[in-house]
Image 1: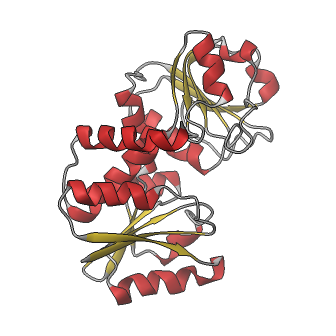
Image 2: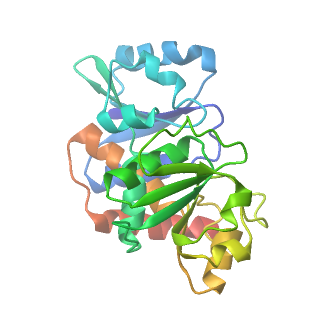
Length: 269
């Protein structure tokens, strides 16, 4: 049996064990996926334990996606650009860091037929999730990106075709895609949206990285205005599938991801 897991601070509500159990079953792997709740000052010990116990792979969740990088032997190109990892693989005694949020976001856009080439995007929030989104969009020919922050720091995103603006400036902007990378609207505080209906009207498609609830207030407003919308559940499953592809050198069929999506939907009805 092969072993995998998720490292983080508070993991009791994680869907990762269920998702990876389904993925392992689908690729005919005899494996187990465990939760590792550890303190920040034990991250180096954790990475050494991965090698010692020969754990095939691990996912990393907030708040450790940046902090753990210094204990990893090699970082992938996309993770280096983003400045965070969420997946670790063990190969020949060395640890390799990847960012599969990047691929999960791309999968979510694909399955919902949201095209980005030549389009303009606005991202709400400037945290870790935002960075994966920014680099995926830039790598896939977005025209321009505006990042909305309560405390704009233009130096933080010193990238071509990327600007950082305030929520006040957002009131005068329209575009193709509006992406929520903030936690506003996440369970249990579900009756709030990061922006008002007046702002949502100015965009054609709405993407929320939140998956619980599946229809946030942000997405609900978009639906009421007949916008194209999606929540973050496909991104969650897509990033997990990419991790399994890395760990087991396989390609996971889209139908498998869609089947897992239909099962997980039942958690939120």
